[in-house]
Length: 150
Image (tube, rainbow, N blue to C red; front, side, top):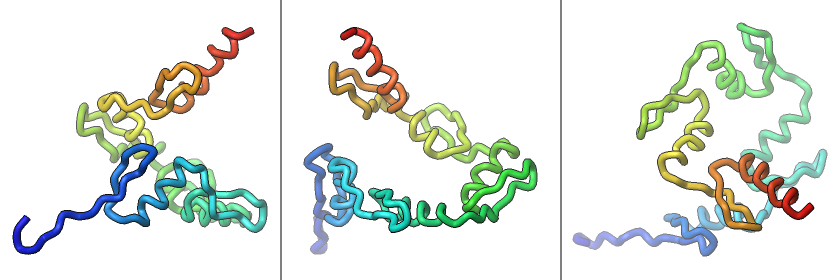
């Protein structure tokens, strides 16, 4: 390093090894491992890990669906939900895989797809250790253990 530059300090998750440039980011990340849900809805008691999810949930207690699709008439509470929905009608797929070029309408589906290329299988079976790309695949797999014990 020259000119007095310092390498950034990294805060590491002891659970998964993920690195963060700020300790506050690590603290928030740790909620994934601890299951902590510090944001509780005063109306229904439901708790949330993230403030953004909590804020969105609180709005669900208001009955208005003020964003309506002009194509099919379906209503949404949030303009972002309507925007995402509109891709069904337009066919827009703005999220493209850098590895194979496949395009997706939803960023979360792209993230899931990319696991095919990376080999990441974050959902592991606690009984046999087999791992899966999707949580739904893990849940289906669990039934093989319950059948085997019957």
